[in-house]
Image: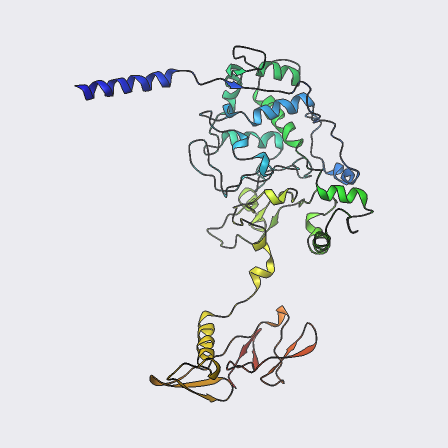
Length: 429
């Protein structure tokens, strides 16, 4: 009897909690609106003005971007009022997600990484998302709201929800509904519509421009970006020179400040024809677009990881093509070479007699039958700088990069190479 009474009390308490209204949220807006519309950009951003995709019917205004900012951080836009745009696009991480994939309103995960939202304003094609399925920013901001995994809400229901949403405002003892007044300031009347929600969000996102980095400070004091920056260390200036020599042809094309690709590109990570993410090709149904993705800006890249459309790179270091393309020896070859070196006279073990046969073969006797442990390591390919010479002795290799001979100590492994196809393989002497 007592157990039933406790269970009934628990059920009543749960019902009361479910029926009780949620605690009112607090909305704090600055007394003077931030300058979203007339931000003073550095002089080197002049080349980016021709890349602006802001439409004539939705220019950035201070009141409109303020409304968009409130909407960006409001969880009311999701079906169960638990997820906002900022849940996946976090400001401290360059408006991207520090996780590989994002978690939706009901606990399910997205299939791609939440990309960096900085500099969306300066992208001439005016298309958005990794696969560019968003035709313009005003349409793109509604797709995550409508997505059944991300926010799961019907945008047509938002005007009624926002009109009824209440917040605690400084100076007021009771919750008030702030959205009608915010829409009046932004658009002239308090009417809340789906189109106005999209326009306000687009204005706020276009205002997210990074232009106060140490690079901007150094470029403002230099004649060109090719000069050494006084505010940079020697290593940073060397890194900048390497970037301008090897990376700027894509990431600084037709501009000198955005560090963004102006067209989708293939990063080489989606190679399987059936299981790979098609990217832009899944939208255009063009085989030439398979594996191509929109590339976000490199600004704030230090805090924007993980990287790529699938978040597969946690840091920037593995993205180096040299690391991905450098060949390695087969494991079997390494094991045989290590075995022969361990049995050489220098590293011999007690009770094991070692006899050499030429330069590459070693026969061991002692415990068990005699074994030939000749090892044939694969030489490095010519395209990576070291090309084995056919005419040199077993102790000499030729470096094609420096054009000089390099003497190496005699080892039990053969260093004499023969050419077989595009790769050089070694044979025992």
